Length: 489
Ligand SMILES: *[C@@H]1O[C@H](CO)[C@@H](O)[C@H](O)[C@H]1NC(C)=O
Image 1 (cartoon, rainbow, N blue to C red):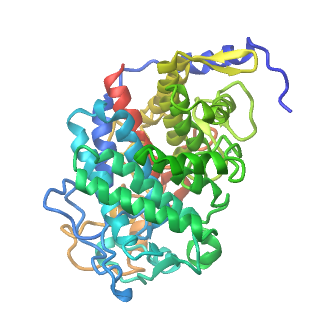
Image 2 (cartoon, helix red, strand yellow):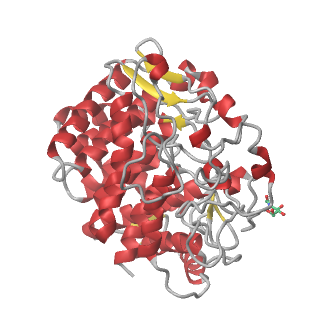
């Protein structure tokens, strides 16, 4: 039971957090946006194209899929290792697409690069879903990979291919893949209609497979995906999430009815203050609320109530055991790589504030009412913290600002480039670079790391991977946030 909230206290604390931001020069959000997108080029797997801007990377893993007679080259490495994990890759692609759908008009000349970042993901997801009734969900044996500190270009670890199919279901990863394909079909609808149709048709069939053959991929592929990207919270949210994106992309009545019919069964109102590669609940509620707030779907009003509750649960001052704030004002949630929560929750704060503004509505939180501009300020405060307005005066985006992480947990960045050191560096020969106190030789511009701990302290040390490792799903929602703030000061 929530205790009755005084209308004065949360507002006072909220303003304290927002106003306690250290006064600094305005950030160059456009520069940060450019870097945030460039980061994805450093994560590319496969054959690099002629217009690759990040030049110290080379082709890698070009034979992925050969062991199963498929071309599964391409796609993204998820973080500082050389595995292609399909679940977070699909989520990254969905969030990059959502960033463009809502904020592409704010991206200026960076829009083209953002589209390429999406397409690098969807081209791979199309390969991974080319066989009906099968989704290739991972390439690379994570134990073999994690046992080595190797450049992707030198990789000689096991490139085992993992798949789900009708007898080994994975509604989580398949649902997220359908969501990514559907979201990207909106991105390309007017820009490349035939590609958009291909994406949407594939999303439809992958979703049908996900829904008809229900189960969690961590049941089917436990040894390969746990504890790395183990689906802890179940596959129900990805089914709703996939249906929500298909509804948005296709406007077909069957998806509206699916959401309506399954809202309770698939627990739309559960664990509402989470949003990440595993848990889509808050995202589902915010995404569907847009329809309600635009006056197009009154029948979905319970999603709006859930979204309101989600917002209330993450505001500072309304104490909630699952969301804290560091003394410096950063959102903090338990578990590793905190910055993924910061960027994804801030993204929802911003998108929801825009939907609310259109409808001229506030969020009622007990006796206190949160305005859209308050939500936007809170999101901006988080972005500014990332860019350097924090107790350490440290930018958590590599290559942005005067001080940023120098020893990120990232194989390609921390080992000498192929150009600098053409001879191969074997599995264990890489260890001395991992353990070196020196800065990484290759600056992975735009990478945002896991970030400081709950006391705003940051070790800047490779072995502290929870703090020093970048991931694609930290950056994907940040692309939308930076686009918005570069256009609205
Ligand atoms: C945060 O990090 C600092 C420096 O690495 C360390 O001294 C401190 O114990 C950490 N605090 C928590 C709560 O983990």
